[in-house]
Length: 197
Image (cartoon, rainbow, N blue to C red):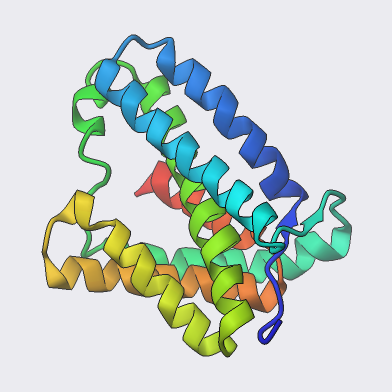
């Protein structure tokens, strides 16, 4: 591979399993729209894993060592500082949670975690590795960020400034994963962002 490979590490591996459990929890809420959104999110996560496996891009590290944690922590902090700074300009997402927050906060939290896990497995777990196999790392990072931004048109519509900010966030997440060769930094940062911002 031209630019190395981002591995599905132990944190990410268990987060993928958690995604299926969160789908079941959200489905039990009885909110049809949210259940449909959760199904789409799980489909995104599972398709990211399946496409990576089919394309020979799926590599796992199921054991986490102390050095893995210490090497990921600074990148998680960098991700969060940049994303929180960008989030100052980005409205709260996803829009479907507005109705849920007034009813069941636990379901909203579960959906936010599910969404973060699914997007990271798909965009950084599959697409980033595909791009890294075809191009230099910096072009791959930019391509991944652009694709991440395009995906968010469904949330923000055609607001160029908001999509640009999401693309920049995607590039920061992709860069931290490329530097650590692990999916955990972007996954943890994305989950924290979705829960806090």
